[in-house]
Length: 454
Image (spheres, rainbow, N blue to C red):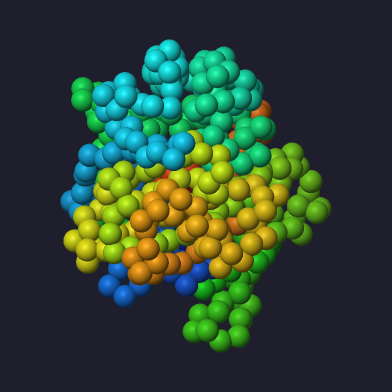
């Protein structure tokens, strides 16, 4: 990109989907010079890909829903919208040693874990919940209290509590009702209004395809992408500028400390890394904004990634009513991705989201694998070790921001109290679950705010 005296230099810290969407939107203005700093060796963050032999797929599971308009617009802008493959999906439930389908009205009627009255209350309650347009009031109510009022105590204990326990662990007791409303609303929206059948999509080649296309598009727009670059300090400097200090480990050698000056800095990383980079400023400029960022609690994830010789079930996701199983669910991604695309192999994820006090936090990767595989074999006793072609355990510390009661009133805007510094990250996702459609939406909104202030 050609430069001029009027060009505005903007640094984006973090090369995940939020950062990429923000960069793409900002780069549409030819007066913007954009630099992305990504501490990993490649772009993507939680959406980065993993390769084993001829299998290349996402480290963590992602889907595109038909209602994900911003994400689909982003995919169109980077030239991969025509590679979205849609498939009708099925869901299952496991409980009392049984695996059953939960994919149609007839499945719902036959559902063996609930009485006819409980099923009526469940269906009516989900319909009622999906019609709530403004969940602001739910932010002030604990999830247990709200679900019990809508579905009744017995249904909460039989159905909702096991699902919340597997998803949030002990943190469910301090989570607001807005969290489960967002979950219901997103999944209900994936169903076609007539047939009530769930459809999900993926880009052929997974996020490896998306990230490659995004990188090429941004490069063509003049965006500079710096990987293996961890931003460690951001400071105000003379001339109404902001300096960015970053450790560069490109090439695998000893880390080098570098510094560049920008007109604006946009953080898209988790709150703890932002507070660390701005520590010197925050210590001398206390503000409620920084206190609210510091109060955000994250759930981490440990996810067993399996490559199998065969399919386990016809379900994309198997929800768990068995409170003894150690993972959140069983996600068999090759039920929405053709096994032929994987060389006739099958990919299964066993994720566990957990608060800091969860015992799994202290377990080694091998210990996690042994415990999770042992539990998986209680669900599928005929699964043999020689059918597991490959396995990895992926872990991330800051994943799902915990939406506690009164979370909404603590959320700040993109503009921080520090001049020319912005924050846009997953802690700002509201009225939605953690997903890339929400991440792209936030990135674009932040870019628009910056552009309108030019």
